[in-house]
Amino acid sequence: MTSTGRRSVLVAPMTSCVEEVEVRGPAAGELLVEVIANGLCASELPQWSRGPANGVPTTLGHEPVGRVVEVGNDVEKVATGDLVTGRWTESFADLVVVRAEYSVVVPPALPYVAGIGEPLGCVVEALRRSGVDTGDRVAVIGAGFMGLCLIQLLATSPIGELVVVDLRDDAKQAALRYGASLACNPDEAGELGATFDVVFEVSGTQPGLDLATSLTRSGGTLDIVGYHQATRTVDMQAWNWKALNVVNGHIRDEHQLTASIRRGLATAAGGRIDYASLFTHRYALIDLDRAYEDLRSKPDGFIKALILMNPDAGYPS
Image 1 (cartoon, rainbow, N blue to C red):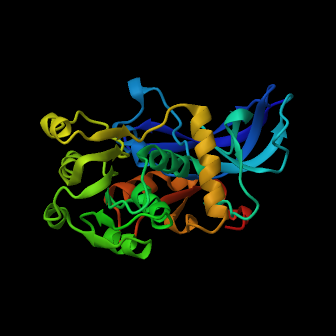
Image 2 (image 1 turned 45 degrees about the vertical axis):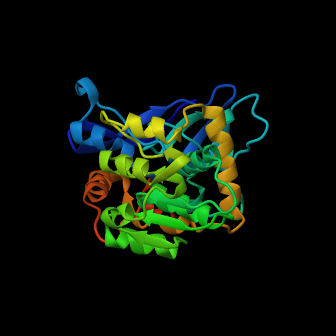
């Protein structure tokens, strides 16, 4: 049986429209989910700016949370009515069909805003790969949404000093609120020297990568969390000479990401982090292009955009 819903379609550079679409029911091992909201990810900003590949309209979005409205055969751990999340592509839509094995039931203690699991799972995975230890001196380069999420997780761990580097004043202020020991500009950070046991590069920029290299001590760990969508150069001599442990913080294995989403949501449900507060700006689906514009320009206080599929539905946030 099919259902009718809406989806946002990217039809040209920086131009989206909402259209009606028929959505099939779930097959075995699948769920039909009514999407409540999506986080807006900076990784999709270049595609939105360029427009659809080869001119073929496409639906973006991969940070959803929603309610299960129908369960396919052979699904045992998810039920109709459950609030669920996962990394599901083309999720700027009212209804999506997803695989149950890549879906996580949001803990009852969490509102839907705190249930957007994909970016939290990515940060948890990057942190787990870093091997950060008790008493470590840690630096985070970049205090955007992912950086601030990471800062909260680090602030609840038994590390030593936590230094955050960003250019924006509001980002540095937010970093201090969420647990940083010190927040400074890149030129100020350069004066600290190669003294950090673990450095997380979360800026996704060439200068951020260079600074992260310079701040990591000999034998330390450089964890690349930033999403780099252009060619980068690295100081290979420094990486070799300092014997750095260079970690790719990204995850593509869906089972592993799903496990990290589950861990992240458990951390949020336990009150260890204030994840929901990072979603500072809300937009209706029809205002998706304005949300991307704000993501690009970052008005004062902007951390993360939340795209609401049906703002009038009255979901408790």
